[in-house]
Length: 304
Image 1: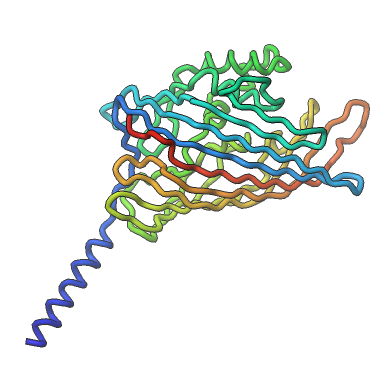
Image 2: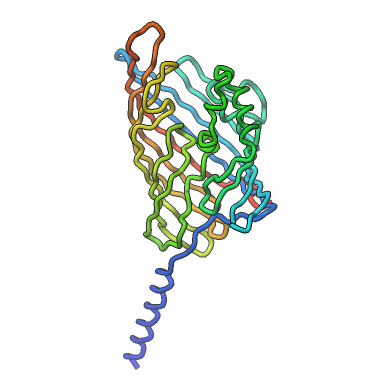
């Protein structure tokens, strides 16, 4: 009898092990006619040192978005409209503080023309089942709005806002889902549009940490080298920013839809800001430190 009990117990362990080891498909599967909502807060801190003096600039932007699913193609790709329902901004700068809340109106802080344009003209995009943007359907309308809010670009706005640049400004979800089934502990890699930095896409490593009936947890990490808002080489018009750093975070996703429910990631980097000053032969180089934190939390209503 004791031998049978041991045999049954061993069999049970084998069954549980087989179930937990079974690879699971993790896809973005959004339903037509639904709106998927979330609130994202990005806080950024930039510290620059020059002539034995340090200046710090801080910024916090909170955005409530809704992905309205317009169509689901036979391939599984989804056409969605990304609506900004409201957004707020706070800036603590060396020359003063600024705050803005779209629900109350007011003057949009300087430097947030891209954010304001995306809030004014909701991007219409097709995304695949990993979460990446495949097509921007209203790219020309977005370019016109960005050009209107960036008058210094003039006729160069077409070149400044290519489709790839627009994808980076719209931003992909923090987690790019895998193309093949995964088990807890397994890793996959993927490029992700970086809305925080206007540099090229970077390879990210994603790890499935755990999996339950209704949700799963994914960690993300990346090393970012020589990336930044001005590109790798200083531009005569205004210089550039070269950064080297690391990104790490963890997010919880809905098992059925693949929609991100909550999570946080942190990007920390150091580099050099290069400023091209008229009348000065050599560009000025300023040591710079950057820290950006992105937090995602559910909105009040995520069902209709």
